[in-house]
Image 1 (tube, rainbow over the protein chains, first blue to last red):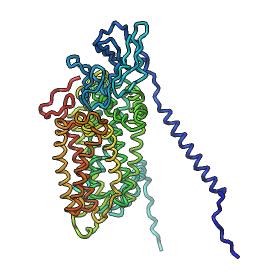
Image 2 (tube, rainbow over the protein chains, first blue to last red):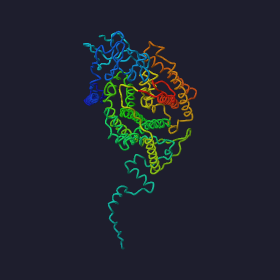
Image 3 (spheres, rainbow over the protein chains, first blue to last red):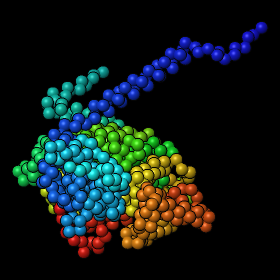
Image 4 (tube, rainbow over the protein chains, first blue to last red):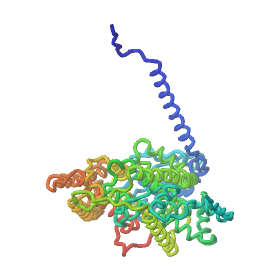
Length: 164
Length: 468
């Protein structure tokens, strides 16, 4: 009498080894990709941009002034009430450096005409969000800006301002 | 019987022996000889021994594929020697370009040749893609070669973009800043990807080094690899498709001629003519060079390289996610997938498929020529989604809404083609492609010639000088 063989519910040795090879092969591939991606990671070696910068004394910045600190890539904005904002000069649209227009009292980007007010709020598109900020700390009357931390925001809040 | 012993040949001289090895059979005198020469030669045997005479007509392929290959060779050669005079570090990179232009014998010529060949290559590659598309030469069995070709087009754009940064002048620095900013709009991984590509938070020393290394190693290696594969596949797929007159019932009778001299002679003359033209152009027109890169001063206007100006113009009208990621992404995917739409093998080799195809192409181009400038002007002066819908997220008000508004007429037009003109699938694809491509060209032209300081619209003859 012939015996019809039904499919074996247990895994054969051959299939097990195939699956094991495929699995570990996949892991090896991922590891190789990981090695190359890790290799390509940038090392933040810049001393000026990316680190804590001391810009000067509190009294160096009169109220209602905007000062461009070029090596830090930011503006020091001192509001009328004496509070400090450190605004990253990179336009939030496509990265152009936004100059401050003293007569118009606005930041006006030359690339696509995005306009921001003194606090960096968008007054004219195509910028999708206000200008980014750097954290400001005031120690012993000195104003310090940490350019290693970029603060993105959707709107202006008074908590963002630092008072001496 | 007496045998006449043949006189032994006189000892061949060394020169004779060298010449003998070079062409063992002697130069061919008949067709069999010419065919054997093709097969026996490393370079010539890229060609078949015989080709169909109808494919030799210049007005069929315009020699575009071959020209692209020639330009790659010129770029490789000029690039290799330019390496001797270049250091990928600021400010030395800029000084090296100045040195090339002044103190290096023929430095300016070789740099110009490299620059103009690179720019011409983009135009030629796109024209080649269009030629293959409108003659239907991407249809089975040639789909894989189409994919390889589109991949090479993207690599060519990558080579141009990475090379653009290398002079490290204001033009280079800000074009790449604007171009790479788009990367940060990729969903989820955008910020990480941007830092990876730039080698840091902004375009800097790492960027220059990374772009240089991509430009001279990875990208050219990939292009040459794919190019070899591309040529091999042309042969494997049966050579060039045969040109056919429009709406002819049956295929023309093939007539085959030997590659030597019919094809090779044409290729040689074509190559020499183009090399001469490029040399003359490079002697007359210098490659641009502005002041050294200054991260603190963005020029006004700050423009991407000309081949990306269509994209930059698009970005003036849409939220970056829509204008830079979604639309171009869909377009590129669409181009890759073209061979897999409904196919009609009978019209392969016919320019624009059929009489109706020709009319639809012209119609598509005409619509785009009118609609695109109209919409640009409307959007510039009248439409202001952000002001009309201030509480809505800009992604919707300045992204999805204008996208829907321009896609809707396109869908309606396609329906009209289908119902009224009885267009089949490939004719509809032709219409849509003609429309979209023409629209993109118009946007590119507007971006290059009609945008000035503040990226405002100006008539080209009224263009105020750039500052910054």
